[in-house]
Amino acid sequence: MGLPFAFYEAKYFKPSFVVKLYERCLIACANYPDYWIRYVLCMETCGSTDLSDNALARATQVFVKRQPEIHLFSARFREQRGDIAGARAAYQLVHTEISPGLLEAIIKHANMENRLGNLEDACSLYEQAIVIEKAKEHSQTLPLLFAQYARFVFLVSGKVEKAREILDQAVENTQLSKPLLQALIHLESVQSLPKRIDYLDSLVERFVVANPDSSSIASTADREEVSSIFLEFLDLFGDAHFIKKADDRHAKLFLPHRSTSESKKRQAEDYLNSDKTKLAKSGVPSSGSSMIAQNQWQAGYGVQQGWPQAAQSQVQQWTPGYNQQAAYSTYSAYGSSYPQAQAQAPAASVPQPAAYGAYPPTYPPQAFGQQSYAQPAAAATLAPAQQSTASSAYYGSYY
Image (cartoon, rainbow, N blue to C red; front, side, top):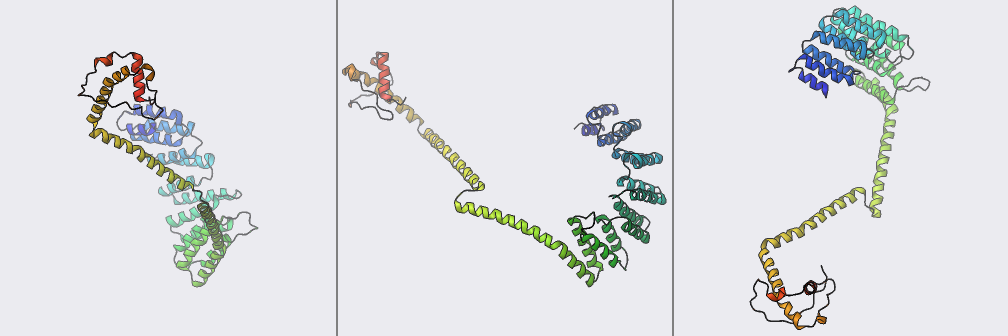
């Protein structure tokens, strides 16, 4: 987060402030070449040449001196400034000490020499690297070097025969590989007639047909891809005889393998479908159906929860005054009439509380006149025990 902010702030603040931001970030990120590269480029953008040189020297000599990325950047950076000697020294350091045989460093160094007009020096770089890789046993870089060298010669100098000689030399000195055969097929496809179809067919057959005695066998995917590329090449430039031969070979080697893998996949799918069918017949719900049912139940429960609230709100909307007045008048009437009945009956005849959920016993009907909302004086003379007993008899045992 700090370095992007510092790179953004470089446009609006002084270089000293940006340097402080980068130095704080590099306390934790000093072992990453990318951060040093951004630091150098930011100082270059600000116009601080001394600060950019200082940061590049610290990166290449102290903190990330064993990583080739920073040295390749240093070579390109010095070339852009016009320091050709410094760029060559940076490339040479990678070739000899940091990472000998690094294909990226060889290609970039050769391209720089070609940009400077030194085509022979560029070719000599490839040839020296090829000699070094030949001395290694089972080198993985050697086929790529041959293919890249032939491509460089063909594209830069236009020498087709020399490019073919380089690839033929690669066939003699290295094992057949996918990059090398791709380079051979591509070079023949861009050349004028006649094509070396017989020669390519023999090489492709040696590569795609697995030899049990060979120490290194290419993967099935690589062999199938090379065979497919050669079939496309023959479809453009070959005759019917070579097309039939290559097509039969491809079908014999790779179609059974593909059909076997497809059959295994189909068997797995059939097994899963059969399990689902058994679960459906046995009545056991699958995980998907149970989740759907659970969601539906929760949705229905939510609807039921909301319906009484709607009904209650509707009652409160239409009869609020009536409910309050009726409840108050009933309670007032009962409070005025009950003491008279209490006075007439003896204390032992007080009705027992009703059972839970039952209504209290009825009292003999009495005629009442117009009742007022004020409590009569007789209600105020009730003893506390009588009031509690009356309340219990009226409300039952619900409360």
